Length: 326
Image (cartoon, rainbow, N blue to C red; front, top):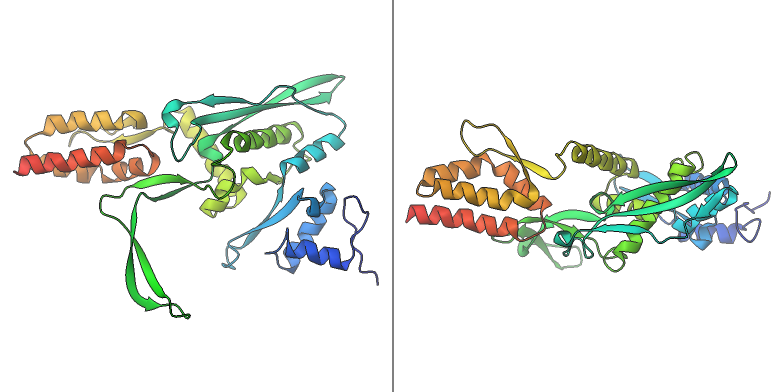
């Protein structure tokens, strides 16, 4: 019985040693069934794992009940698949970007809002432009974390004798969105977002060829959040729907005991809260009651706004309570 497995690439087949190399490198975390599926998919897509055109990523690999494998295709693999159709032409223009200086910060180094990429598909005797956009807040590998933490001795030790530490938020810490800079999102944010947009455009142009095929940059966020690509896509679609109805960048607050909930744009929350604190000045009970009544909205704001506004507003609330209490 032959030990040679046919795979795409410069060589028509790989021997057992090469297949083992693929298993150890681009599919290191897969089990037998997952690896067999990966090999089958690589053959079907005619992509070469050893050229990093395609590789496997296992989610929740230490949680059997939630374990799932996703097959990731590099952007070069996307282009190779499109090129083989004979109907693909890349755009001769650079990707376009929408920037917002107010968004620039540690969680968004370039202040990116979105990247737009165009590709061309030949059909019915003519070239047709296909355009797609990728939004930073939907695809950048962001995770919610505390702005500052402290480590405390738990009184326990690891098997090697090292001390186990408990991590807790430091006093005054807030929830912020932090960018995972272990890859290239912090160094080359435009390039990474443009790759996502290009993958979306290619999938839009050739939906059958790219069905259930994800680019590496598309799933970077889901790796950080420990979500499956399908879950990340659903989250992105939800965010898009919220933005269309004006809810994506707003948070609900109540500024009076009998007033309706009011959607406030994230960029205006600090001013709106300060206005309300001014109205409540001199009434300690009212300030505390308002903070308690809106605690969920305030926490959501602290988690979604990476600027200093939430921290400064928190200080203002505490100062207002000290003033009325003195």
